[in-house]
Image 1 (spheres, rainbow, N blue to C red):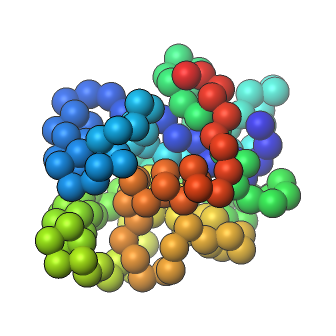
Image 2 (tube, one colour):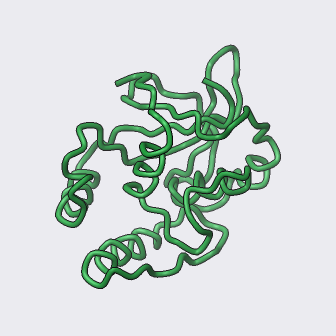
Amino acid sequence: MQTGDIILFKGEGFLFKVLSGILCLVDKEWRQRKFKPWHVAFVSRFWDGQPVICEALIGGVQENILDDKREYKSYHWLEIPVDPHDFVDSHLGLKYDVAQYLFTSLQYLIRHFWNRRIPRLLDNSYTCWELVAEFVRDNGKPFQVIYDCPTINDIVRVLDENILGLPDKA
C-alpha cells in the first residue's frame, strides 16, 4: 500500500442495503458483484507504519487511521506514489455533501430511463465519492469528466476495467 492508493470499503448497514438494492434494479453489473463497496477513501500518509486515509464522512472531510476491522480492497490507481499533503490540507474540515444523495439518485434514474447524465454541482462540500474523484483528477488520472456526478458503480467499473483490486481485508 502507498500514498494515493484508493480504498473501497464493503457496504454495510441499512442505508447501504436500501440504496444498493435500488442500484441493483438499474445496473446488472452491480447486481452480479460479490464485493459491493459503498465507501471510498484514499491513503494520505502513514503514521507509525499504519495507513492514514482521507475520507468524507458525515462530520466532514477528515483523516483517520485505516480501520482494518472493515472489509476493503485497495487499488494502485495512480501511476506513482503521490504526496497528497496539499490536497488534504486544503480539504480537511470541509462539509459533507448530504444533498448529493438526491443528485446521485436522480443520476441513476435519468441514466437508466433516458440514457442522459445530469451535471455535478461543483461546490466545496463532498461525499466520499466526490472527494476521491477530485483527488485522482487533481493527480492527473481522472475517473470521469469533471462535470459528471461520481457514482460508486462508475468508480468501481473504471477501477476494475483498468486494474485488479487487491483484496487486502476481504
